[in-house]
Image 1 (cartoon, one colour):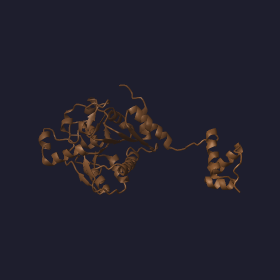
Image 2: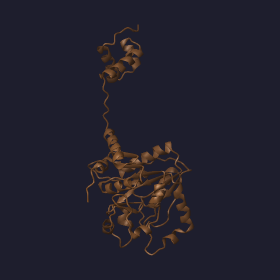
Image 3: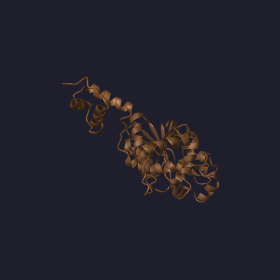
Image 4: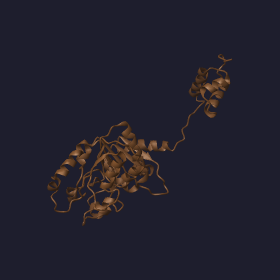
Amino acid sequence: MVVEALDETDAFVSEVCWHYYVNEMTQAQVAGLLGVTRLRVNQAIQKAKALGMVKIRVESPFLARFELQEKLQQQLGIPKALVVPARRDVTDYHGPAGAALADYIVERLRTRPWKKIGVSWGMTLQSAINRLPRLPDPDLEVVSMIGGTNAGASFNAFGIASGFAERFSARYSLLAAPIFLSEGVDRDLFLAQESFEEHFGKFASIDVGLLVAGDISPRSYLISMGLPRGITCEDLLAAGAVGDLLGRFLGKDGEDIDLPLGRRTIGMDLAMLERVPEKVLAAAGAHKVGIIRAVARRRLLDTLITDDVTAELLLEEPHQA
């Protein structure tokens, strides 16, 4: 027989909550055990919450990163930040950020019908490709936003564009040009070729740009393998550069570094990039802190994907020169 008139004393409420939260019984099971209606069980649970008898605590490693994400968004002035855990005993600048980028791409493709994805190149994007499941979308097109280098690494321009396209069973458009023209080559004349005009025309309809950023050191593939002969890290640092985005060198506040090299760069320029509706930057490592800040100050990213070690460094006060 169901007991409806049972007084909801503290002892009764405590017993209900013990069975519900600790013994993981359903409300119906608790009601049957105690001989009351499910409504009375629900009321007891609500009363316990109101009186503070039940305190729900979420123990999760994600909590600290949620806080990091919010702090990054506020300090960098960006719409969104995604922070993932990195192993602090092993240096991996590309794996965690690349895996997070892959997850982000999967989620965005489920919720937003991208038609053209613009891609840069680099090891973090290669890491993302390695983590991506196959998501057939023959209407999708992958567009290379930057020229390449002579080195045949898998994370060069061709490998990245074709790699993403293979995962999506999609078309891809490769910018079949060097990232830096040889000195003395007329850039306007070079780009007047019909194939380049067609490719650059696609930049205006890119829905999202998947970006990486490089610092000024041999750790950067662009610096170690892509710089023209006669240009060194020291030259770039002396000019005030902290890194590059799409082969365009920026100063610490996001300003353009005026170098002759800039007029030899082949790819989407930063004015074009500003007009891309969604800009996603995946970058991690202490050596990337300066260029990440610069890109954020230039308002050239909407979503930053990084790891918790880098996030903590980004939140530190930058040293004054």
